[in-house]
Length: 370
Ligand code: ZN
Ligand code: ZN
Ligand code: ZN
Picture 1: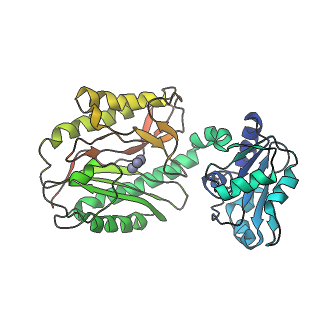
Picture 2: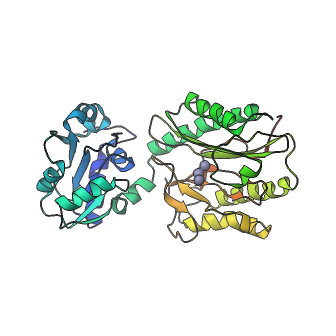
Picture 3: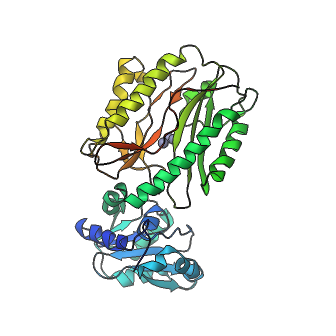
């Protein structure tokens, strides 16, 4: 048994422990972030079943289609001392798993398992109540190990390097789409293996938080919200927003931009172990509401990040989860009064002492020459 610092072999036993303490009989993980978290195996999602079976008691097994066996053996999963069973094209892998497990009362299924597999597992194990794997894995995945924090730190530095190049691309006369293409190339050039999203919201599009890109032509006096992220070779994600202005910012913009910057700082300063996730949201919302922009802050303050761009813990009113060291999440308040808007987003890790920002590009309004 070995594994790596990022995907240690102890994860299998940690997961089995959570299966037992969570009152489950087995965890069934098809390709996706849960499987990658436990084994390091970045398996393809296919109609043929690949499934890591972790029983509450007994040895885990990775069930793979015969033609995927070589890929599974070449993956980090092979360093875990994990039994692999290859099924032939004419076999029924669902029946194979049901036979192997015997009677199952409660089965935890990977949160992102396809319905195709959920329903076939239900048919193969009609006595099993199906619950989400996150009921067992959530606490583990939320608290990042030092190696995971290191991977997120690398991702943060990579996306910071992209933001450092953005002002040079924000030229009046270019379209959002043209700028977005340059940014996507840079996300890869700066070390990511995948572009997750590129938002270039200019002018009135800056007031729409999940706008992507359009053929709108940039003009002097535009505010531009640039929210970008990707996946590193480690599997860990970046996500960072900065707001730019082309030439002079629009009328009235600087007043609320300063409020936003103060709010993002206040939320960051509120991060420490024991503070509830919802208190971070409140810390961001309070100065924005006090300044009269409360109705223009139309989304939660943040989301956890790791092997997924959006995962637990969510920084939102109603989430009483206390922060603990290793939790990593975005702090991304926004103010969208129209006809423009602004957002500032950093990934922050909770440490013993407080928060550590993983994005360190300047948070002032960045003026591009245009
Ligand atoms: Zn978002
Ligand atoms: Zn973002
Ligand atoms: Zn985000």
